[in-house]
Amino acid sequence: PETRLEMAAAVKRLDALFRDLKFEGNESRRYSVPAEIIEVTHTVDKKCDVHGGRRGSSGSVTVHRRGSVPSVDVMPPAASLRRRDSLVLGAPVHTMTHPSSFPSTLRRDSLSPVPPHLSQRRDSLSKRRFSTDSLEGLRRNSWDPSRRGSSGSSVGCEDPIWEDPTAKTKAGRPAPEPNENRPRFIAVTTLEDVQAVRCAEFHPNGNIYAVGSNSKTLRICAYPKLSDLREDHSTFQPTVLFKRTRHHKGSIYCMAWTPVGDLMATGSNDKTVKLMRFNPDTSNLEGQEIELTMHDGTVRDVCFLEDSSNKSSLLISGGAGDCKIYVTDCATGQAYQALSGHAGHVLSLYNWGGAMFVSGSHDRTVRFWDLRTRGCVNVVTPITNPQSRQGNPVAAICVDPSGRLLVSGHEDSACVLYDIRGGRSLQCFKPHTSDVRSIRFSPSAFYLLTAGYDNKLVLTDLQGDLTTPLPSVVVAQHSDKVISGRWHPTEFSFLSTSADKTATLWALPPL
Image (cartoon, rainbow, N blue to C red; front, side, top):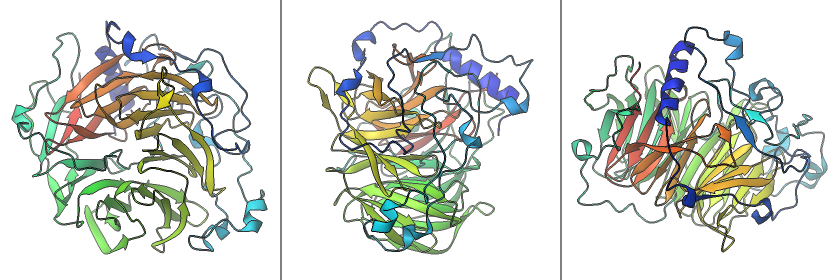
């Protein structure tokens, strides 16, 4: 992991990407969305994490921009290097009681409805009282490498990725628009495949990453040393530590690691999920894999939750077919709950806080789920066209580590910022000119990385007032559609996968 001095220098370089950035040409692609346009279609539970007995809020959502990055010469003590207070008005999330103390009866009946006695019990749920604050007067002024969230893919297209036969890989890939005054991300390594590469995920320790493609091949690669990276760096092939051909009978659509990195899951259009034990010391999969067959359509996304009361992991998976989201106990390999509600294919999943997760669907809605109540606690329809007051299929989704800001990416190239606690949309902006297929917050959550079918990866600065125009810059580009983008767990480097048959690691050269 990077030292505090290196992190401060990296943030300073990222800020330089937005130096003297002008908004001309972007104004027409950004607009605020009134809160009343958000359609809440589920009875709210005021005790759940989403609502938390929130107060109505109509004030300015301000994230005070830092005057400068903390001095490289004078850094705050280690204790202050927690996650900044952005989107958090109380104690840091990681110091609060972990909410995943599920009742032991959760697994009693496989795929059964909620037992009547359980639905009436309130004492089995977390007694924690959540902050009722919204996004008022927020500040982004510290960094915390710890973060929670799905590591699943944001890929959501039902049809195959049609590759451009004229697209060139590696040497033929167009570079982002040059700018002598700003730093630029360098393509450090490029893994080449024979078909489109759909997903890539960093292991939680950051030392390795996994890649899955349409060729059914699963690879695990070593994360290279970046301290010697220079502007004139020549891209090279990564070191492949593990390779398995025909891992699935179909394309590998998505993958995820558990937070501790001992399990990996992959999903495919062969309608199965494979659950495997992983040894980080040998970088190999071990033991007998478990094949889950409860889905009747393409598995689009997977993510893990930790059940602390049972000291085991829970796997969340969703996709096409019956549009259900399944919860699997990784200790037994059995799916014990099927969550219904979406009327279209589930395209994206993302979790936070131990018990909460969200799902984005082709039915244009985002659903909030709480496993402590074993159900959906809220439904919103992000509006991407204020004139028609209509939404658009939700192809990608992400939640800030604090659990207060949700960002959705849509097939009409729009991204919507949604204040979870305040229950309102902040704005809609369009960083791409085609489908947005992936969204992720940076390790510090200062920035948002989006990937789209316009072949680009875009970085958006979230510092400042979230209801005003947000500066965005293209930081990487492929020669065909970009399917996913994933940040390194602690460093300002990221992976991108593309229909140009490559997975590329990008990083900023050190000062």
